[in-house]
Amino acid sequence: MNSRATQDAYAPRPEHHFTFGLWTVGNPGRDPFGEQVRPAIPPTRIVEKLAELGAYGVNLHDNDLVPRDAGAAERDRIVNEFKEVLEATGMRVPMATTNLFSDPAFRDGAFTSNDPRVREYAVQKAMAAIDLGVELGAETYVFWGGREGVETNAAKDPCAALGWYRDALNFLCEYVRSQGYQLKFALEAKPNEPRGDIFLATTGHMLAFIYSLDHPEMVGLNPEVAHEHMAGLDFTHAVAQALEAGKLFHIDLNAQKPGRFDQDLRFGSEDPKAAFFLVKLLEDAKWPGMRHFDSHAYRTEDEEGVWDFAAGSMRTYLILKEKVAQFNADSEIQGLLQEIAARGGATDSRLVFSPERVQELRSASLDLESIRQDGYAYERLDQLTMEVLLGVR
Ligand code: GCO
Ligand code: MN
Ligand code: MN
Image (cartoon, rainbow, N blue to C red; front, side, top):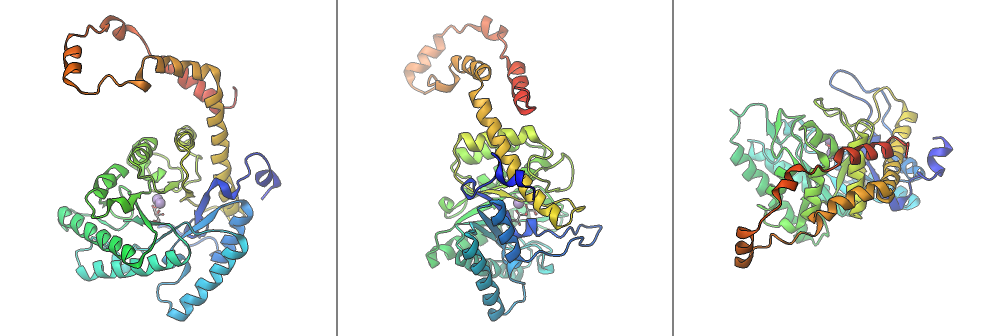
């Protein structure tokens, strides 16, 4: 890693709350058409390298660390070795999750499989993985239902499947409470891949589902850039809805070209303008959560490329954060925003219902002539935004 990336104004530090998954930097470049291209990087080495690069922590699925068929003694040996490297580097494990997708047992889903034995296995596996996460200090537990879906609607009653999904999450919430764990769940939506169609396809679907659970206060969201872009949606709006509902518990940052398979590209690399508005939303809100990069290096890369990818992800975030400060301090931009605010939008309390307001509003004479004529100057505002982004202001 060149010294510029680790020492200048955009150098990441733990207080920036950047995290990566063991599965992200550890991605060996396997894809449906090709074999692994890079040797697996041992988890302890991942922790050391990420600490060196200025990350706050590392997240994991149970089986990123402990192989699925490991016995108790092997599990403890691996976990202890991992804890030692966390201790030595000061790295944290703020989020953990369960692999409920690799095992052939989950081919028809985990919590929503038509086979009730699979649903039991999924809950059993999730309980053990929750124990592991808590042992490592995790405060957020992610559920991404990659296999919860169908290829054909002939196979499954989607209402029944949602019921099974709810039962499993209710069971696991009660499990966490019964163990006295301080753990919150964050649900991650995705429209498709690996299933043809995945249940609860977007952040908005997930949000509505949360309020149907027994303990909605324990459950929030983990929106991902690529997943919302795959559905052709505006990610910033999804995150804003989560934030406004007090449900933004975690976030998965990456980049995605529209209309493709899930590419997991380096944050900001395909959609710098969208990434800018996302960073603006998070930073203006002073959102305290983890900025997790759920992405991986191009398959062309060797291990050096992996660390370039990791450093670049954090660096882009910090560059965009500086652009946000520049946008917020730009007098011409702020002047235009003040003109918009002067229309009264920001402080509008005129639509608070009362019988008097109904009477007033019935007889109000609104200046429709000027309302119909006045433009909003958003072209100028957007061009100024672009000039900030393109570095000419
Ligand atoms: C994907 C998902 C996963 C999840 C991870 C944590 O598209 O593969 O984004 O990377 O985020 O399993 O739950
Ligand atoms: Mn993803
Ligand atoms: Mn993800």
